[in-house]
Structures are given as structure tokens and as C-alpha cells.
Length: 89
Image (cartoon, rainbow, N blue to C red; front, side, top):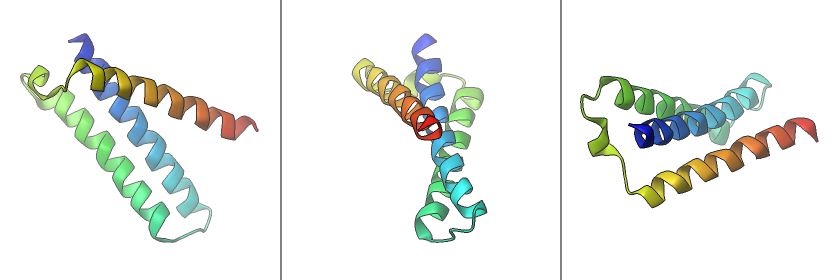
């Protein structure tokens, strides 16, 4: 159960970061292919991770190996730190 929350939470946070960055660019007036695809893929990641965590009766079957779960968590932390760094600097 704990690995499931970590994995799906990490995917949700990464998708939220991608979607936010893409939507931020689109709203600011930079309408090109990359921000639009970032928005679509980020929102899709959030919806897929949330639906997999909520609607799946046995979500432990869809969780990959421990190494992939922990690398996803670490890379999510790096993405959050990089996002905060870009806001501060």
C-alpha cells in the first residue's frame, strides 16, 4: 500500500508540474506545440495516476519494481526542487 501511494503520488506530482508549466506558457501567450503537448501530457498523467489509484481494486499489480518506484520518487523530488529553484532565482 505504501509503495502504491508513493508511486502514484510521484506520477501525479510530475504530471502536475508538467501541466502547470505548459498551461503557464499557453496562458502567457506562447502558443506553440511544446507547451500545448506539455499541458496535455501533464493533465493526462494526473488523471491516469489518480484513476489507477482510486478505481483499481488491486493497484499493487500495476506497481513496477522497487527500484523504479524509488527512482520515480527521487526524480519527482528533483523536479520539485528545480521548480522551486526557478521560481526563487
